Image (cartoon, rainbow, N blue to C red; front, side, top):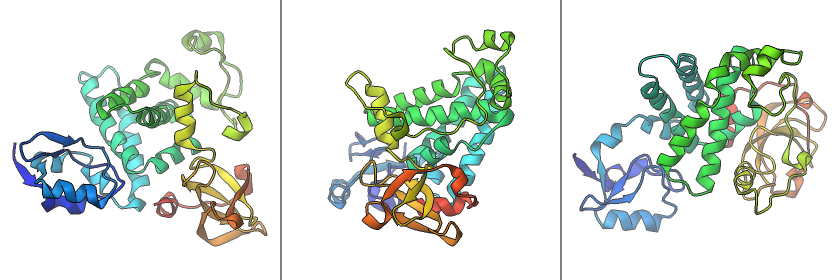
Length: 313
């Protein structure tokens, strides 16, 4: 292996953002694994002073481009990942399925690490229907699992195994899930036989999202994993539609300092009219505090994913 000094690629490091490569000591000993975070300039300077190294091959690994991508390009990258996963998961009989799954899941992991708020946004919004529903449901489950496991302290390799498990959890019924997503009638006996691992099967079309507040869920010591998901997503997760104290209505695009003070893209003014330009609102400020979760019907506007991604960056 060939190495270069960390000082020569320090511009690739952003404080508070997962590392795009492993960092090794001058004797090649691993100091920080790819995906770990350097939070202060003091930490970075200490690594530089001790002559930390980076493997040249790792600088070219898939995923580096994602971690360094401009915010407005991330929605398109998510789309490409979804397309690739669809091809892989709908062809489980292919000779090198495990290798294909491994390659398809790596950029997903990089995208979640690059912008977890955008990843949560997609889980909450779930703007998908038809035959692709099964694949996207598995992807959204994988995102939630990865984020919860990260909060619980799982290492990156273990999180990647969990992600692959989530992606393949319903491999035998992807096509059926697509049909059920738009089926307005209860599952037939034949369909129930396929999905017998579910406690209660019902059509998923037209089911509105439910907020944590509406559920009235309170964490307890016996629900550690569920608590991790709720803490990671927050009370108002990205993708949630809310009304502010100002009367504006918008979408949460980024988690905030606390679980109930996210960043919101205001899209509709207090008169109920579409705003000329979406406005970034910090709900920690009293005038922009969230007063309620509302139905998406209150929006009646369309904003490009690229613009929302920029507001959340």
